[in-house]
Length: 574
Ligand SMILES: Nc1ncnc2c1ncn2[C@@H]1O[C@H](COP(=O)(O)OP(=O)(O)OP(=O)(O)O)[C@@H](O)[C@H]1O
Image (cartoon, helix red, strand yellow):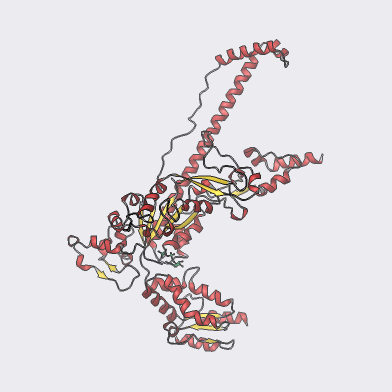
């Protein structure tokens, strides 16, 4: 009696998964099943692809480890402006690049959403067709049975071959008379296929090319991997093959092949693949890699072998997927005993490729092209005093035909914005790979104001980072506004973008870090310039600190370290 109650309770509680996935839950065995699929307890998991919650699907459980499980890959419910707003919290400036990248990533995932919808529709149509066929078969057998004379019904005892033969004769006659079955709709409809749009991101070093993508990857919850092109070589040579970036994407997707097939691969330092003259005449880490990338970017099937040493893997049932037409998919790992190799096949057709690079020297190639005398402003090209890695100014009207141009945004445009495929060919790229870069966006060098903002504004700003670090000593770290301005100025002169800020901070804070713990530390302009040592005080040095801050007119608006706050912090601690 007790077992019966448990069994009834379970079939009601887990009705959805049982019906959908034919999970047989026998009375008395439910606890074992629930430990295999613990999420059955919660019944539903969020599904970003539809915007609704969906039933837990055990067949999607293709990951390799509980610590590295991501089932929620899907389309974000964000429009490009929402994505940009998120990126704005971390990345300062670069508005045009942010807009282009956010819109491109959004479009990529709208396509993914569309494809998933179509797959779902195809699946439903296929199921409908199967149901109709099943109903037809059942009806036919019923008709055959009804067509038999009454004595055959009564004689229907196993072993009576005469009546069985008679029945089959009658059945074939009945099936001959049956109406011909026609499916209402074709099993799989034709859909318009929207091709992906790969992106090329150009900009001087340390201006946020990779940082924008890293920040986006956290928001979109899709597998995104950043690979360094420096280590890539042509197949057969020492170094990594281009397929290694797909392997990394697969790892990022927790070995979920379907998720990886819609992921994003960022190829950083792409400019290092430019053609070079070599003594042997073979450029295996430049043009050779470009050639190898062609198929990968266009769409090919990459086979990845993964050695599996886990013993539990052998006992875990591997789910089988089928396409709408009923054929098994090739993208499932081949089952193997522990210690053997799992094989994954990833189709790269729908993987979005983002190429990033500083392209040092490309601006000169562009300038040489645009400043021909026929263009009328050859003489106007000036050397730029302030700016990192990109030292030329062109008249604002040169950029007037570009997207996102406005007279207010004109100063942020650089010759890199004028890049065309001809320039990239001159730089050392083959036309075939350039043809696969559909979207080119340039980042501008960071100005002194941008660098100052990077120090203080983003969520993870350097000032916030070092203040938090000093609090662990424990020490309270303060900067005057002029000191921050001096740090930004020195970083600008270093021409290494925002990376220069970190270098400056380390230099300025080296001594206070060594002398820790000191209750109050103040960084002044003279400290940054190297004229004075950073002053620090003991617990009773608060008034001296405030006096010195006032001397340097420290009180940046909205600063976390304003005088009022200093008072609050001290009151709180006291
Ligand atoms: N616009 C920015 N806003 C905030 N922080 C930035 C910005 N640009 C760069 N940074 C900081 O500088 C670091 C380096 O930036 P990033 O990795 O994006 O450089 P990059 O443009 O890809 O340069 P490289 O071509 O040398 O790789 C980031 O981790 C970030 O902390």
